[in-house]
Structure formats: C-alpha cells, structure tokens
Amino acid sequence: SEELNISIPEYTVVGIPHEGFFAHRWYIGCDDRVDGADIAKRIDQHLRVLNDDYATERDSALKEVFLEVLPEHRFIEFMELKGKLGSQHKFPRVLKGKMLEDWVSFLANKNI
Figure 1 (cartoon, rainbow, N blue to C red):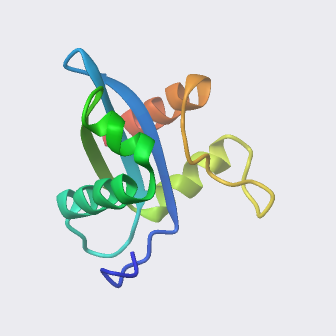
Figure 2: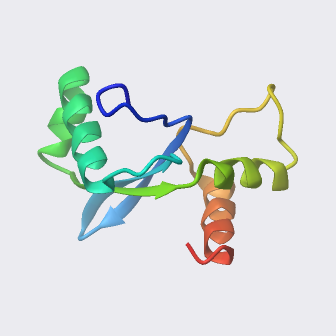
C-alpha cells in the first residue's frame, strides 16, 4: 500500500480449489480507487520474494491469485454481525471453515 500511496486497513485471504489445483482469493478493504489486478500482481510478487515456500507453491499447486477490492466498512459490518466489533477483535487474515462460510454468505447477501 505504501508503494501505491493507498490505505489497506483490512484484508483476508482464502485458499480455494481452482482447475484441479488451488488458488488464493484475497479480499482487501480499501476506500481508495485502485487497480485490483495490479495489487494482486504486487502481492504475488512480494510473497514470492519473502517466502521461498510460497514461490515453490506458485510454480506447482497454487495456480492463480484473485483479488476483490471491497469498501473497508464491509469488513467492519461483518465483524459487527459476528458480535466481534472493537479493538479486542481483529478480522482474520486467513479465512476457513465456518467463518469462511459466513463471509461468503455475507458478501452474497450484499450482492458482492
């Protein structure tokens, strides 16, 4: 976000099946005008440099990186619905299980 001079106060990532392999779907909370494809590419490039295991997976089983840009308030709304609003509660950085199901349902109900 510093490179692009934007604020990304909330984000999460989900592992999903994709074409017989896997993909990551990132959700970022950003109220600035951004190019989601560019951010996805930058995240992927940074993770490849920072984490050798990630780079190896990107060359084998992790076939794609998707990204959705959402207004920051969607993350806050979701946490409020879960009864977890406040400084003691942080949005999970990796979603899975019931929390992932609830997130997908929440977004569908918002037509996202």
